Image (cartoon, each protein chain N blue to C red):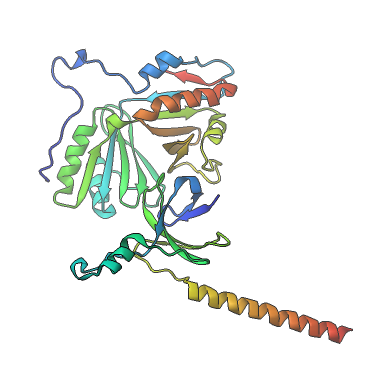
Length: 219
Length: 122
């Protein structure tokens, strides 16, 4: 185990619940509003805040082994790959995506990232690697519905046609002059991982772009 | 707009995602102490500005954030080749000139043959 110091960014202890936690979009929803999902809504937007985001850097072989040991999932074999798996624990799923030849983004259910990081560090031992907890720096937006692709076509330069962007692909590209990680975990769902500092911009852009499709925000 | 193939992502992307970073294959003098002022000045400040084939360093800034090399023709803007860091270009100015020379010679030969054939037909 390396002697890197870890810091759990989530408050613990008996007073933890008294500390207010706000999602990156809390103020945006307050100021710009959140249109309700109506009968003619063709695309819905949902923020999945407070997930655990970890950036893994290092050699693919050692990271793949450690990931198999800790989470029972493997790194995507190809560039631009996205692998999803169920997370053994109380809540849900986790995913890992290719960001660059030596960098991957691991997203685990909120609150698990500290423990996962510790276990990965143990499994990696003295290997040459870096793990950064970037949970506070980015947030995940989810677009669903038949018009989700049309909203994206208005916003990104990247070709999002199903022939070019199949399920299980994830790219980093330009979204309305900001950068975004665009992922397609399933047939009807698109995920956007955006910087916290650009979350408000992205949210308001999406509301504007989705207006013609009657965009609704699930909360 | 360029449509650039990123050798790390393995697909073509819009130019908007990339930044040019100048001339490629500039190596720092191995022994700076023994380098003359003129050589050091050349290394720091002077860059080629060829009319024709040019090797350039680019970075996939919004994307995988990796640097790679592009061989580009500065007159036609045609991207002749893309290769990763540490690799050597397979298309160089001499190689390209030789290729073009061969191609134009071919064209001339074909043209003269065509004339000859027409002559026969007439």
